[in-house]
Image (cartoon, rainbow, N blue to C red; front, side, top):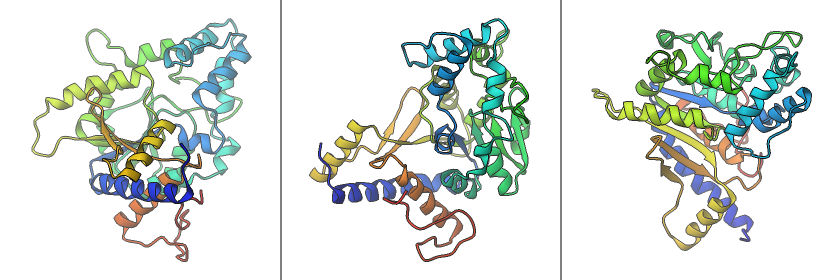
Amino acid sequence: MKITRAQEEKADEVAVSTAVKTLLPFVKDPRTCVWIGSGFSLQVGYPSWVDLIRDLCAACGVPFPESMSSDALIDAAQRCRDVPNSPYWQLLGQYFNAADARLATSSRGLDRLIRLQLKVYLTTNFDYLLLRATEEFGADEHLRYPDLRATDLGKPTLRAVYLHGIGPESPVEAASDLILARDDFEDAYSPKEGQDSRLLEFLRAVLTENNLLFFACSLNDQWTRAALARLNTIRARLTTRHSKPRWVIVRAMTESETNNYVGALNSGDELPLVKHDNNTGVISVGYPDFSGQHGVLLEILRRLCEAKLSIQIGPSTEVPGPFPGSDLHHA
């Protein structure tokens, strides 16, 4: 489908307005937490999940799987880990340590999310990008797997939570306690003697008592989706004097979704921007990404900051922090 520049601009503006209207009540709610995926880390040069497994396979002499499914990737990581004298943990330490040069590159999207000052920022990433961003805004306390305690969620200084662990301090240290291979996922998510694992207990406390916004992630792996589906069942049974917590993912639409959206916009039909997954309970807010640079997401976050913090962030406005003017078509 041939899409003109004018159609792109109209589609972007409608998507931004819809997303801001949908997300603003969450941003103003003190119960709202954020789940941050790998998208912001990819922008500063960290490898994708697929590329990480490919590198591990090459280093460990393990065939890379033909399938790109989460199951296949998790199993490939397990085979790498099981190789005698495997460089698995050393390589992970080299990729995701606290001294990595990539941490000097700031992420505008992540900085804007932190500036919104939401309750807690969770991630399954291994790199220090989130921790550095929260430290820049004065929050130096964090939790990391396996030492996750639901009672710590109420601490006013807590901002970053590493659900799947974090890399070592030094590139010469081997990583440990990272959830990447099959045994790691089994140990972290499977019930123990009829009781939820510590990670599931922690997620239960987060997800059944707070709103959650998902940014820069896909929620494609089976373990996360299964955990969400299970916790959604629990959430549905909750009785509370407050409104039940809601979960929202903000994501770039696929090419076919974008074409359908632009077609609906041109014909005046209902716009397929906000959808609901009945199994996981997640509301999906989509946006087009014509440039591949996620400028629409940056603009959504910019306007949310303006609305919550009551400051104007325009092309000619000097504001402390990493905020330029509009990011639409200029990312």
